[in-house]
Length: 340
Image 1 (cartoon, helix red, strand yellow):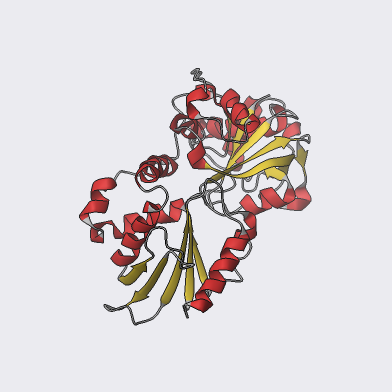
Image 2: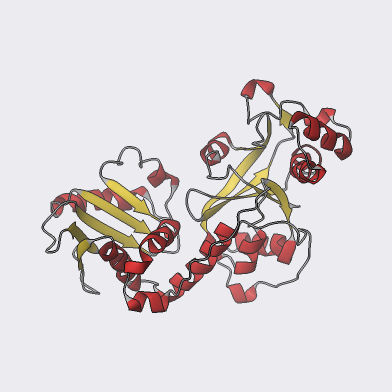
């Protein structure tokens, strides 16, 4: 059994379709020919060079290495790893169908494999950093085997994704060549996430969210630890906090993505406090039942997962307290974007 990394678009734009259709698509624009009609990789290189008017053969070779497997290398029973770009979770599936080409589906859905998704919304923070690094290859499709990832992921699955990290055996292999570039953005977020969860786990997460809201110009009230007021934070604009918007904030740091019932509870709490809006914060993300409610609650509720929290820290870092900066020491770095 092999483990294959799939990307559902650079911003996760195809993720919902992958999950609802129970398929993985090779989302390559205008790749409108049956891959089974190509005899070998060398012929595929030439087709890609001609059809896409590529100037570098290296680009064609890179593309072919990602395109070829869906038709010729992947097998039924192989696993698919789909890192979410919508929130910081990972989905897992098993290939159950042969390669299919259907021109009627239109670009970029011509090529697909049927998949049984057996685990969705597994928080990234459950995985060791080297595993996340292996899953960070900046490619649409590639095989994952570095750092013994295949065996370690299977062990986590067999233990309800809760295997103590100390029990996972490390055996380095180099199935992914070192030349393969890694999604630097994911790598940075994973490293910062690891630091934050060490420093702000549990009730301390409320302190961090309050600091972000203060940096954004809100006056806040935080429930004392141990008290049960049905809300973790209240926030309002203006110096004394009498202005609008008035926001109820619910914060969860559970090990799993939260269900829709938590959102419904927040909406009820908003009316109790005469709040106009709600902010639902869940470090480990949200189940699909919550994601589906986002359009309906767009004018009432916002949701923050760990990715959004980190983005807010980036945006408001200079205005945050020295205590927070000491706990999360960050440095802005600019670099040349040389993506091929």
